[in-house]
Image 1 (cartoon, rainbow, N blue to C red):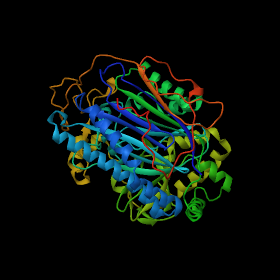
Image 2: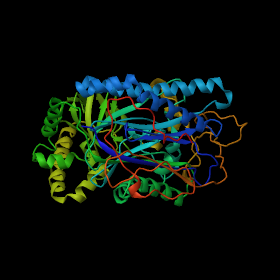
Image 3: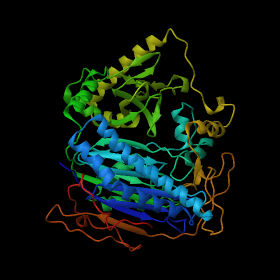
Length: 532
């Protein structure tokens, strides 16, 4: 069974820039949603984001992808799931190539690039792909969770166990991109799958939203508004009211009824067995384990990847569902809980040398510290059990570590060179190219960035680390642009046409209607896509 969903999008140029370099696409019937945030100035930024949207939407709705999806739906297996992820990832990578080629063809577009966050809903699963710092959030049972990892220098420093003062000098690393479409010869496209549940809401947004609206408030807005259209409008209005220094785009999706996941019964049983085997959760009832894992986010890692202790904008403990990791001098398999201390109060950072290393294909659940805290406030009885068991596990780890010499976590003051310079040289081996954009808050005005001025003669290019130009502010021009996608589900709702009036108010709740998502048929792009 396919998922029944409704969706809406709102975008605004903001209060500083003259042009909107964000682009988006929504097609609720096909289950395709995309947000791109361009960089490189008016002559190129909006071209890059528009080209990315065009390439990804056409390829994600192509026969090649549809055939791969059909195999997954008809013969679900780990291999067919990876094939779908691979097909979606390849489509985004080809968009990167298209942007690079266009920049080579037209010298005025040199240095252009774009972030991307996109999702394809297939049955009861949401398949995500992203590059850059545009984000996806999931709101489930009132709890908001950032499910994408920012591809920024700040995120890489934190993941490497380096203590960064984000309220001071470290704030400049927040807007330094280490990955984006069109930047460098190669681009890393991150992909993952989330099973959907009835009532789920998720948000795709540019950093013009995420810089102003904290995660907890995202959950409150998406849960509190009557429709995706009103939620999207509220998010944009909030960002504008708090500064609006960047283009702001929000795509909000609401799952009315989750479809059936294509994951086989054997796959689901294996994952449930791994959860039940975890020492942290083993003593709970099946019902309690369901309540505890509702905050968990599934992730896949490849051989020799490092498992970060700080990810998804928070401290993280990982529960191994399948595969093995080497950590603390031992191999850990199904049911192991890696970095349990990350869920305790004020844990020490994990030094880079002590991070777990993946020894083969790995599937894990991420438990973020903030989500765990929210769960504990919501369910005190469960919290008592989880915290008591967590304390026991930590005591056992401390006992084992007592015979070994500890290593202090590095801080910025312990690093001989500027972390930006250190990571600039290291990025070459990781095949990442560091790019940056104009800041979206006054606090990040010293970040490495693109010259995003609208001067047609401006020579836009990637600024090298260590060179810090002043941002160029555009003249203010504000006004929302809203669009919606819907098709008939309920008899008492009416579909509305996209709204292009920049001064229009948010659409009413009764303007959205959804239909079951078509998972294995070729669908033409919807008429409500906007290449702004």
